[in-house]
Image 1: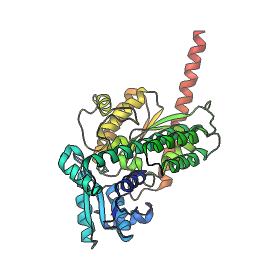
Image 2: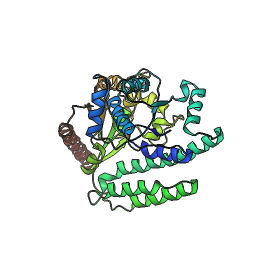
Image 3: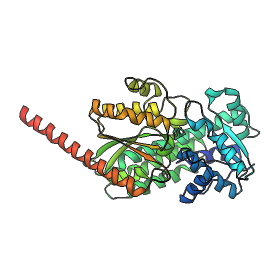
Image 4: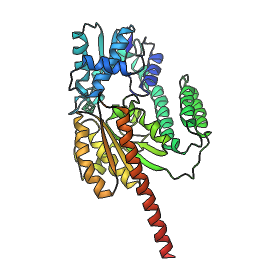
Length: 371
Ligand code: SF4
């Protein structure tokens, strides 16, 4: 069996680590490019959401590279993600590809199917060995997210443009070979030392922006035009609502974002009081929380036809008015051009920058009048 999987940000690092530990033979699909997108668009139904199209493109390229088994996450809830694997299977078989498919359904869909799938992914291992393996691998994945969170926050303060990105790549490579728990913790210390060594100008007044939206668009740099790096270079300090391990963790404590699902649901409640699939509810809740934490603005990204985030988009203007926080929603599909996205984001940054400067001026005037 030569298993493969779709790309989604650092998912490749996490899954290859799991497969190396489980002894499974795997093929990493070629990096997602415009060719991947074109392949997906050619095969997928026209009105499917963008992540389905690109993941089909990943699978086509991986099958071409020799993979014979496709790994896909399943899902429950009122969005199309739960149907992805079935549609991918039908589309690719209709196109003449031969393969097996392994669908990892989330534990709430049934513990037995979940465990049975894990046994396929770790052949010959006992349940205890699988649990250990996942635990250690997940710890490593959490650290990758911690490094990313740090990078998003501090890139805006770098003294020399590009040094944070370079250090971040070096930090990820430091983590890659770590196998044992001791090695992982030692690599973590080294990786953070690399990032912390980047010269920063912490006196710089940076706009603080929260990023919310559909998880695939947020996590996959090809799809979001590597917007986080671009924003960092524009002097915007970022925090993202969704991180990979928070998204896949069954605990719902969300260690990386630091905000539990319950807290997010509570924050969203005055505007949306039930789960609508995908990141619809979290997008609403995180916007409220970003506003309460004093962020200067919120950027909302989601794919064309994404039902959960369309619901969130319809609610954001109310939150924006109630909390006086600007929001910008951008819809992304295969027709979206980078230049158009950047132009709108630049205008948004101008708005946030002048609003922040106005607020700072006002508060100085208030302090002056009190004296
Ligand atoms: S969250 Fe949106 S884009 Fe993602 S699978 Fe569901 S409907 Fe599609």
